[in-house]
Length: 518
Image (cartoon, rainbow, N blue to C red; front, side, top):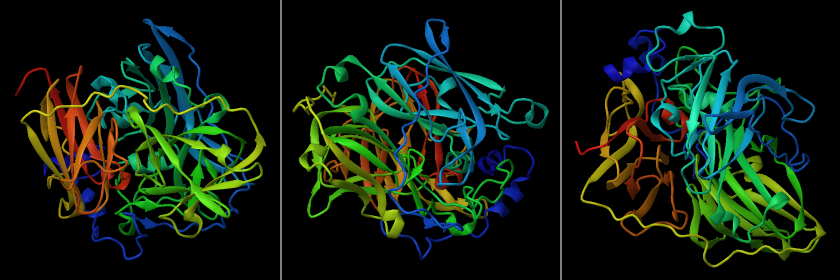
């Protein structure tokens, strides 16, 4: 089976050995929490009390120079010991040794080059999630950046290999949006992201800056994820191969997805943020491997505060939308405004996950500590959003459990990932309708360009489907139709489930964009 042998691309195992490693993959676990696809990995270490740690803000990375008219950034991927649980140190794999990685702040129309250096013990691949990026910089899963000083151990690998450093060229020819970057190595995305290889990438433009939205300290990035910890405060992850170099996949019990029991926001457990009594803009990213969040803002003795959504994965909506709760699947981003001026100074507003139980219900607390002037507002019109008009081409992609060699894995159209094949050859500039069908929850992510949701089960878009999306949460047994149009760059890209355990166990498909109709 060619696709399975390609998944053994490290060359240290026969295809049969790779199949045996995944033996026993099967049905959903009986302990799967409501609203989730995955099972909880309990921590072996007592976890801290919520709302004792200040909310950190990721550092902002600055250019180190220019190259060919583009701003040049330099990032080192390395391990570091950082404090996550109070009073202990956890070893992470981080961009510049931080968790999450530093935030990029870029501008539409100003190209950048990001030079990544790999000082980790494993190969890596960087993907700018939501980026309109040429294929050679998109993060093709086999285009490995090999660790510094390890050329001979990996010479047999397929793909475009780079030793030590690789430049990623981002034209930034897209509207303002909340993007993120993370590791995308074939078979090992889940553990790499779990150990820390993820960070925010913001694109700004004049359209957004002309709006009277909250800014400065009142614009708060929130990178949500969940982790579990070993007895010595290290990240616990049930990989079959703890070196993350040979055998892909996780232990059978977590084949459906790894759920941690400690909620982290910007790398801190259940933090608290002291804020003004004013509107705040929250850029929310679900960077968890498998956990879905349904967020609510609870006020003691009073009604919950609403979220006013102003943007989605691909930037501003045409008009704001108010939500009582906010459903966020892995990979999705929501740009919202919350009016903390509606509550008295001294109020504690708690962000909770209504899908959680016990500690996984708690997320973040805002402590309103001072009155403040607030000149911000949310306009009734935010931006112009082009409505895609689909042509006659319709494609269907079925996401479900299926054969991975002789055992069970995750498939698209009953096929595992084949880097040499293609499940869709799409002419640039053509608008097509793609239909996604699922068995369980699958957040579907498409590289290169965002899409627009047309319908869920034939009834029109859902409440969280507005604007430009690049990741859509397809619920169990659901049918979601989207309008897809690719532009500018011909080449190989991928579409996959953003439950990272599903992705690593073959739920990914090659998509080829072409300059003429096939």
